[in-house]
Image (cartoon, rainbow, N blue to C red):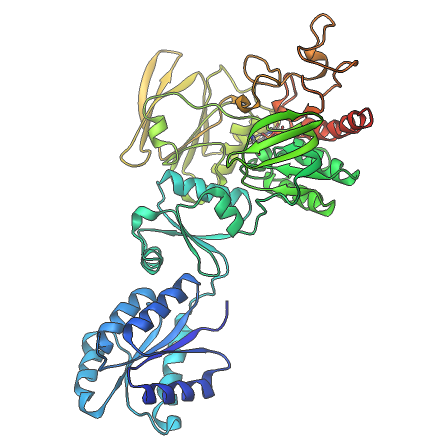
Length: 552
Ligand SMILES: Cc1cc2nc3c(=O)[nH]c(=O)nc-3n(C[C@H](O)[C@H](O)[C@H](O)COP(=O)(O)OP(=O)(O)OC[C@H]3O[C@@H](n4cnc5c(N)ncnc54)[C@H](O)[C@@H]3O)c2cc1C
């Protein structure tokens, strides 16, 4: 992020120029010398530097300046750069003031102007200040910085988005001094959180996910208006379709609203996917798939929500939440499922403030020493229990059914059994959540005896049944009562083709009730909810897209 700065501020131009020149001559190779003609100009320069993630090694301030004297300036400057070493430039007559500043406020040194010759009067002091600064150290800032609050839902959403998209960032609490310094530098208050500051110093208060995605270098705009194939959803099914589509020469666009990897990306360890005998984390699998998609040059749009689908003759047009559109000859719906909300008193108010859906990997370290509860009895809940057991004091799995055996894989049940800090409570339901500003306790009802108990709980992760959220598809795409998309043989009623079907053939195996639109993975009615089957269906959908295009 460039060299650290040495700043000098003096309203007397000839002195200021001479000091800056001398500093540049000796330190210019390793330090950036910034010269300001007034305290206000210097504070502006420091604010900009703060936002850009720059570092300041030394601040030299003239004692007598018109708007603000040097001591007042250094006190304000310290709020922005507390590690910078500080010196006052004084005339002989002000020596006493300078000495008392050293004693009373936190100024390291004073220098008598005009500091000539510099070898005697300037450099020894600067060398000593640099030595002191180098010892305390301050690191370069090359990543996004996020200032937020631990228990704020929008701050959590942003952290989750960045973590799931594997974007490196530095998290700063608005309550911590450095977080406050960044808010000050951006000239906003705590109401502006989450505040994102980019490596080049741009501050964004409460940005949308697509603004953050763009700032993090993720692509958010399509290169073309028309593609051979658009895939909606970047989970295993969508990624499978993108790799096969692009590798077989189709102009392919994949659109993802949240994070590439989908549900699988949230898994702490997938142990039953072929080819990974020791298991693989969802993040790792996603990184590999993302690279593969890039290698075959499929285009990926991040943080874009598809909200509408229209048939325009032979074109299939998708609309985004901001009204933009993109069209293709064919579409693969690979939108998977999202967790169903937990309905209990207090839950919606505390969601994002201790209650989370899915495994929320970003919260792992924060759970250190906490009582963690997980609702759900499927593999996803079991994996989360294993993951959080690394951090939490204790993890309790709350399962509605009689046992885990009917819903969780045998290997996971064994792993949980062997963990000392994991316990399983069956036939239990959460009926209330409470806390001041963040989750502190939950009330659990035990259906074996109907008793309720309120227990201390810092974190609750919810993994209950999932739903497809396909309302945006409208009437044209036939779905079952829960919203899962019907395909192929499921669309035929006693051999009769679906309403509005205009081809003299039956729908292909993964084709929906609209020709040229296919569904793959968890969103498909009666699909197997597994990574392998989703990837397989994604690949198969591309073969059927070829068949469809050949017949056009
Ligand atoms: C924590 C966890 C652990 C799991 N562990 C295993 C395991 O060990 N083994 C196994 O086989 N299976 C496992 N599963 C199940 C497996 O992950 C899923 O079956 C698989 O991810 C389904 O893939 P998919 O592509 O169909 O859908 P998803 O993975 O759900 O992906 C769908 C994607 O579409 C995006 N999307 C949705 N709507 C839109 C829209 N309108 N516009 C743009 N994008 C949209 C979503 O954001 C999402 O990223 C696990 C699931 C979870 C949650």
